[in-house]
Length: 305
Image (cartoon, rainbow, N blue to C red; front, side, top):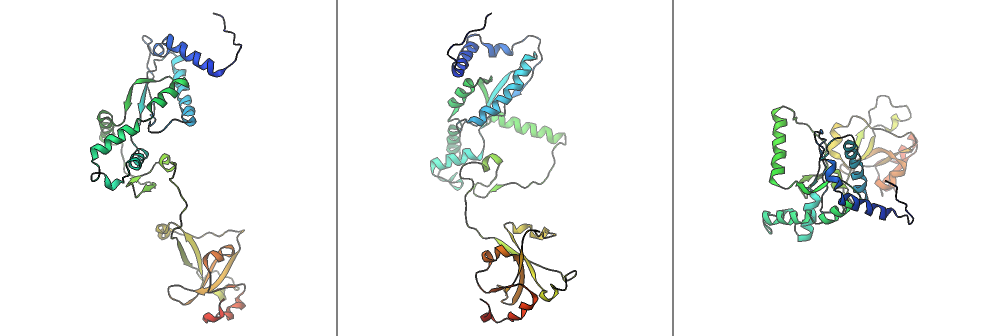
């Protein structure tokens, strides 16, 4: 066999000729029909066909293909079964957007059966695009009989497997911090958090907590300012009961501020980063640069800018 001379070099043409050669000689099917050979089982972590494939899918599938081709060259029968992942919040949200409904409308404006039917259509929308890309990139996988995750057989198999884990005492209850969607009533995966529109800039209420300083260990210079409070900003106030310490930055300049407690209207001294003063206070405060300036603040609001 002599090597073919290529005069008009085109990687695209070479790829198409290779695919044509594989089809003509049924190379893929022959690769896993070896007699008396051990099997290497490969079930692809299936893609979802509700969206078009991208370059990242080509990269991931190329890596998968490397291992399967290696095992094939080592003499194994590698039956590669394709699959379709048909569950997930992006599928539901896409259908709801198309139909102009929300989760609350399911069972009211639209029946559960009709909603599921629309989801099944949507999730297989770009099947032909996936099949075309799979062939063009030379990814060997049997797409003629894929497993589909919305079929009862697949779902019942998952429940059966979970029961086997339970019977063998391999399941345990634990706790995990998980992103959650109140609108969907569901936890969110990292993939779902990266969907278009998942993040947007909004103005929301946050908490500035006051932490009272302890007098023990204060320098003589700071004792005249006691009692005072450190201000700490948080977007997660539910974590405050578990806080055990505050941290300060060596490169951050802090200021003592004489102001009024907005709840009691009594004079109060607080500490915060100098650069953040303007973000917290708009009026009714003075910045204390030394204990001697305390005499300027005697509770008379007229003396405060």
